Length: 325
Image (cartoon, rainbow, N blue to C red; front, top):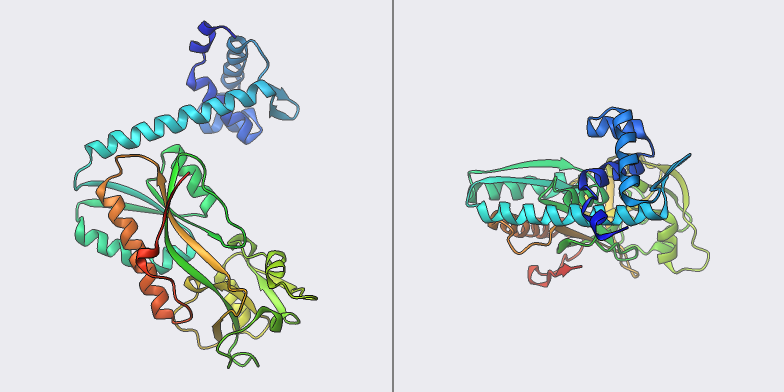
């Protein structure tokens, strides 16, 4: 490819390539982009003409090595434009504007409402929209410029670094606790070790990132193998099954309601497990003051919620860390 042809690589053609590869379909990409399928085919053909190489395999639809190079370039262009747009918007921002917030389920119910009430009192002219989504979806929307701030999480036994161009701030250390029926023989203990639950029937919530095979590794106890009989999509399902006396579970403290007459939550003995909760945003020098203050308010509310739970210490607020990757 010549230097002249580099300038001929239209970002719009790269965006079409990205949509086709992501969907694995010309027609699905056409629906997303608002084009006809023939128009998408023509754009891919034009991109291949300009690149001088095939960028797609058609059956099945996937990127060629040349296409992968262009996909990397497309992501870089998109990230740069998102960052530039964020900086320009931040420069224009004063005390008014809009914050697009994303949060996973237990954060959306446990800490977001109270934090937003505080934000509204401090910034009455700032509008906030909320989308409930899991971390990966939040990362994608941040990179696309569709979101300003997202709450994400990972666990100490399965850390997940954020994508490049994103900055995350640790806002809470959420302890993982054992949850047993109120009449369970271990319910009276102050702490519960995983080994004592080895023979129990379990329920897991894979969509909430609590996978029992990883928990079994962390138990570090010969012969420990959790007997999984039930799976749920969320923590409410987990609580319902435990309350009925069908099984036991582990879950993050913030995912628990303040009171539940049919279940008992107890801290885990060693090894203690922790869910780390982060506020994530585009790494830019010009983040609006309201967004930064919302990060602080979310951290303060998480600290308050964990302190009220009384099962473990979330750590002092001044122990929060910021990571730029």
